Length: 380
Ligand code: CAA
Ligand code: FAD
Image (cartoon, rainbow, N blue to C red):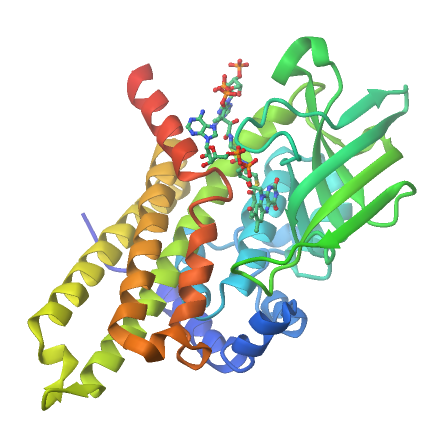
């Protein structure tokens, strides 16, 4: 078993680390406060190839592996999870879905601009009444011959206002249940498609989360992804890889908070010595570091399995479940180690604590990850 990264993987991680320090850190507090999308930074991430990292070069992608993707997600998320969620959604939900299941024409038209960040993508599964229970889709896509007529509402869509390309799941044959669901490529600007107001959130406040409304939107038949009725499987297969991205985001939030807490503990003095010399603080740091390392190994294992072409759904769910819980615990402890200073914005850890919470909710809550893992365990 080899735990060493390749030279290329280390180089990519270092580029992401420098980018996070030099481009994401300045202004991260203001963007969070003002709920401002990191537009300039996302453009630069596209130029670096980080928005189509695993896409083949013939579709303008960087052709990298999933391990590199985890490394990049960790580094970006240490500093700005609002930016890293754009990277995660664009890479693993949108580009991956199109590259894996799209037609050649769909890849030419939609994947190529997404892979370089000329366009941003969104993945639209959740609805007001269908979150965890994703099979109960109410958005309807009536088959009208050469087009589908789309009606309904999607909720909580990341990149909802910024995206140009939306992958939308909708029900075509309600009598068939989840086997009647289709996935469609919907373009911003299609008549009848409107973006609702932006959500005012606890964390990842720079991320652009909206509801979307479809009223008699004509979607050409060639914009359906896969065979008739493939939409739910499309969403589930795509989410397997998405969960690796969010697991790595959670890992990054945790390791960012840990690094801040470690440095602070070495500097802050109480009772005549740095707080890092008090055993109670040392034990917190030891637990944080141990749990982060375990989360990192789970993330890398899931990515490695994906790179090897082996099944990785269970590993991805384990990584997301564990890393998101570590992110929550670690950020709470990082605030505690900072004392009162941890409670104010300048020290960054309060933002990381608020950002951590979403990793236990989106792309399947912790309860859903446990369901996926348990079903896999029991199916053998
Ligand atoms: N791969 C392929 N097919 C799969 C699959 C997978 N990983 N998981 C399930 N399926 C198939 C099943 O085989 C079944 O098909 P058949 O009947 O044809 O065999 C079908 O899907 C339905 O599966 P279940 O019977 O298991 O369905 P369920 O309703 O009991 O539960 C679930 C499914 C796993 C709970 C699913 O609904 C789920 O994942 N829910 C969470 C939704 C979610 O993660 N949403 C995230 C939205 S995107 C997002 O959040 C992005 C962001 O924030 C940035
Ligand atoms: P519910 O499904 O109503 O769940 C409520 C609670 O009940 C949760 O704790 C859940 O775990 C629990 N629960 C539900 N069923 C069970 C069960 N069977 N057993 C045990 N516990 C259960 N969706 C998209 O499609 N695209 C996006 O880009 C996107 N981005 C998002 C960004 C943000 C900031 C947020 C907040 C959400 C986003 N989502 C997105 C939606 C997200 O995936 C859902 O919020 C999530 O899947 C949970 O669904 P819900 O909110 O309807 O909660």
